[in-house]
Amino acid sequence: MEVEDLRQHISRSFNADIESLHNSVLTMGGLVEEQLDRAIEALTQRDSALGLQVAHDDVKINRMEVSIDEDCSRILATRAPAAGDLRLIVAIIKAITDLERIGDEAEKIGRLAARLAGVERPTTNYRELRNLARHVKQMIQGTLDAFARLDANGALAVVKEDEVVDEDYESICRQAITFMMEDPRTISRGMDSMWLARSLERIGDHCKNICEYVIYMVHGKDIRYTSVEAIEAEVARAGEAAEAAS
Image (cartoon, rainbow, N blue to C red; front, side, top):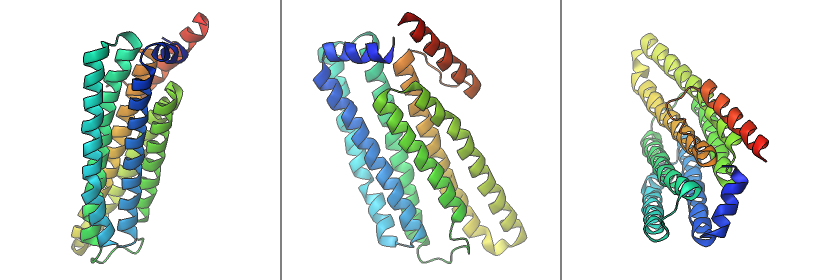
């Protein structure tokens, strides 16, 4: 089913409920993105209070997940959606789980930032982590944009970006291990850097998951646990089929 057909079908049935649900997911995504920004700011600015506030505010994301999940359950029970509508609801239920987990990782970064505020930091002031965070933030923005527009190609671009994030994460870990081997006094700092990088890498994974759900919404293809090359080929085939049918 083409994106436009999906949108038209939704509009003909229960547009108000679906639009509200869709907007709620985007609102939740915006809050998650803000949480990550504040967590990284707390880390780089040595702001313990901000780090703790980020950790405390995670409850807002949790409440949004519960609220959206309840709305999905209500729509499933009262509207009995089928076809594209059902795919959309299923994808939203999965997507908010990943958004909540992104919030959990931001909470971890906030708590670590609070603890590290009074600790001697590396001379680079976590430059590598800031670069990784910038890539991850781009993934979040791309994910929310693809979800908002039901853009399979945009979602595919984010899936491919996850490979860059994985490479950055591995580079940070290799560097931290090298420093720890050369100077045991850096072990604590190196472990902290690796934990921070791990949280950021996991955020990238959750963005990738959400984008896979977007592709599922648009083309009805479950491409989880599939290589990037296979996903790219599948999106291209679906796009060609949609063009031929139009």
